[in-house]
Structures are given as C-alpha cells and as structure tokens.
Image 1 (cartoon, rainbow, N blue to C red):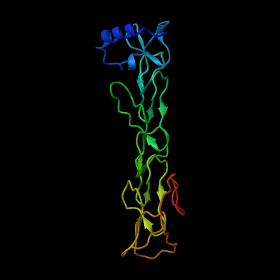
Image 2: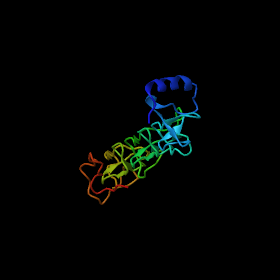
Image 3: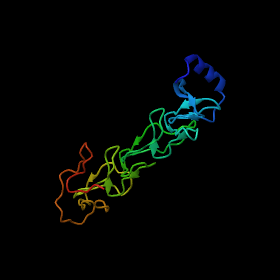
Image 4: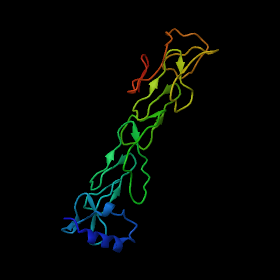
Length: 202
C-alpha cells in the first residue's frame, strides 16, 4: 500500500537531511509490514521503507539498498538483484550518491570483452583489431594486411612500400620478406562484427 502524496511530501521535508542512504526516487515510499521492508525496498528510516533505486538491489531482509558492483547494473526501481553486463559490454560502476550503475557500456571500437559481468574491456592487441563497439571478439588480419603493433587497433592497414607483405593473423606487422599466402584485396569487417574471411576471431 502506497502512502498518500501529501504524506510523501511531508516525508521528504522531514527526511531531507538523510544523505547516507539513496533518496527515494520520484517520491516512491513503500509501506513497511511485519517489521521488515518488502523485497525490492529498503529501510529509509526507523519506520519507513522506500523502493530500491535504479543502480541498486534490495532484498528487504537487510534493510539496505546495495549499490550494484562493477560489472553489474540495474535500470529499474524496486529490484531485488543487479544484472550482469553482457559480453562486449562493461561497467566500472563507481558509486555515486550511494547508488551503483543503471546502465551498461559497450566496449568502444578498438576493444572487446569476451566475458560477462566485467568492469573493463581488453584493447585489441598488436596484429589484431576490432572496428566496432560492443563486441565480444577480436579479429585477425589478412594476408598482406597488418594491424599496428600497439593496443586498441580499430582497423588493419594495407602493407606497401618497402614492407609490402604480411602473414595473416600475424602480430609482426608489415614485412619486406615474401610470403606464400595469397594477398587479400580487402580486409574489412562486416557490420554485424564478422571478421574478414581467412582470419580468426577470438
């Protein structure tokens, strides 16, 4: 049973000095029964429960709103658990105002994350690349193409000049010595994240 709007307004005035706990969102105070808050709510003060804010989880038993930790998020209010970030996404979840994250972040182009519930993304290593955001895998290069010998590569380069050759999936970069592989005319990644033909994804 929800309290009336007039009571909610009065409650905000009365409890506005409470800063250690997340503040009720949109005036959403919840009723308290049998001495405990219901799952999805937390103990706002000695006699009042409030709906769990986005970015947090509330089991009702502990009486607290637990901010979502790194690799987790919760976009909804009144929740009992945080959600894990999908692969290709991350969430460092630095707590703000006693709340965790209410969203997940796609790994930027040049990085990837093969696992869920992570707080960071891996940079595409030397000889590898990832041209799209939100990806779980990294691509290898094609014959005659190379990725710079640094991390966070977004695309391969076509070898030419004094170093016109490269082995596919090689971290050696462009080289001057000949290779036995057939040079690829292009080495583009598809819009759905599929790596170029004759390369690997991992």
